[in-house]
Length: 188
Image 1 (cartoon, rainbow, N blue to C red):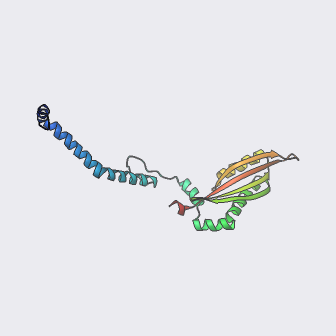
Image 2: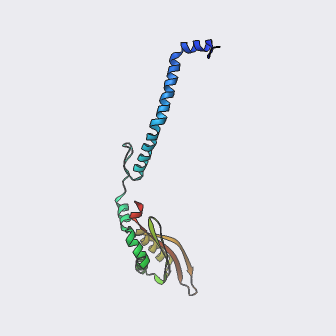
Image 3: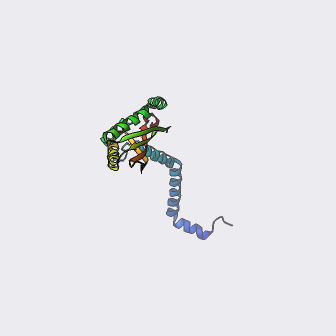
């Protein structure tokens, strides 16, 4: 008994070009998977890393340029990691933050009642300095104070605030702030 039926053998002989093309396609696909797919994945990862670093790899896409104002803001809020560690332990970063805030409050006629340096936490790419302030002010003074904070070059965030009226009719503002200082060595 033959291995292949005579009818099927005659059809294969009649359509031998299709069989050769299918076998060649299967061989090319196997070669591609074995050789080129690993190289293609490495190439895609390299392009992604270059794009993440800000390099223009694809000429059809525009180069992502950091605006100069943002570069100035980042440079003003960066300290080397060794300086950041020493100042954090000495408390000078918190003291300088409280001094800046106190100067802004005096500019607006706000009366500082109490300042408490808060927890200083060190993240891999930044240092966060927190403070709690209590002051007497009016609502328009507070809005002008927030406007000045928005114009400052330091990265400050108002975490929360509470404005209440005291027994003698004055308005007391409780304000919790956080200042962010970036660490360029940790970002590399």
